[in-house]
Image 1 (tube, one colour):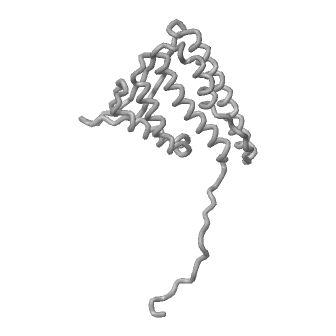
Image 2 (cartoon, rainbow, N blue to C red):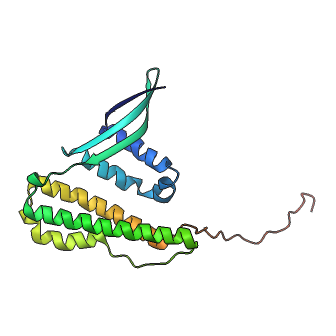
Length: 186
């Protein structure tokens, strides 16, 4: 097997999102969110402060993507004070949400029961505070804000699903009562 890495291109986004869907743990739960992931990655490809790579398996002249990696980099030097404060608040809130999600999943794993929590929308929180300070953002910071909104939508969906769908929930299938089969002659 021969492998090569290269920069992710817009034409790769759908296939890369499908790789995430195929992941045994992530894919089953977030299959319907792939359209949002694709949108976020397409926006990200225009940003300078990122690394988005694909790893391809080469088989003759055919190349198949088998791994995707995406990282975002930010420097405090290139951000305004208002955006830096906004972004730091966003990161802290995401951290708090992810810790809460992890604790919820650990409890479910240990007890096989789900505790339903109410969830506050991260996107609503962002939108209520951004209008006050967005005018101070540079063009690049406003572009990053659009990416942050997309991430917030994904985080909201994740926390809503964890709060509403238990790890061990089995969908109830309602079936009509079975009727005896009739033979062709009757």
